[in-house]
Image (tube, rainbow, N blue to C red):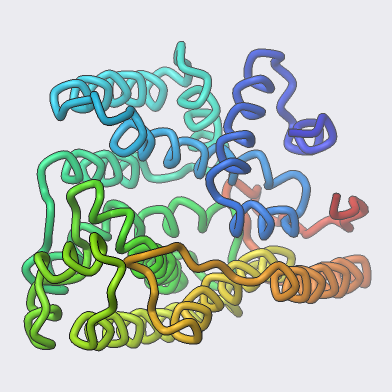
Length: 337
């Protein structure tokens, strides 16, 4: 993380600055699409976003990336240790774990509901024992903690031009849309981890099941029944994007380019999967680099427009978390770097 970002955010303590830098590295390594979008945020808000996503990625790594020799007991012990550090950090504002320390600082600065982190950790624990979902309703229950609360955590950082509770359902839906996109893209990889996030009743409706998915993965062969189920799941995901879309205009104009860029790029993953014939059991599909560059350039143009408008007399109605009564949006002079 650049010193400029930390300076703009008012992070002065050397150990805390190092903690935020670690979160940024986690976000950069795991979240290529969203990390690119984060570069379009006002510079002072980027450290908070890196803290939120860095923590989420770190917890997810405990569940998925300890290596083939890590049994459920070891993962559970690591999650329990993280939960204790999280509780301590949210209570005392301090932690021996740098990622938790940055998260606790962000939660305090933006008055983020601690219940969102409790729900997130519950979803991480579910991944230790739950290997499939009977229907979409049960999957949505899981995604409340694994994805919807990420959108809700982000909302105070992004700022809104409406009361936050009005924007909250859209923010939660966007988190779900992003995760469903990941589920579609990562069907094969998740299957190798022993998990199927495609609802069992959706698969059954097309004559497919876990065993057919495993056969397709192992043989490299396609099956029309699997493709039909994947198509339906993609259509369901697009409907969730539709639920989320009205929330874009509810955000602080200076945050909109970031979220719109992520919105377009993640939606582009659905397009790429469909265009390539739903090969997700055999390889990961990505948005082409040229398309990513075009979307990022559009986002940058929107950043410039928003900042020019801010310089022209403020952005009435934008209410960031923690703002004092009578707060007015200052002119923004930083560049996107």
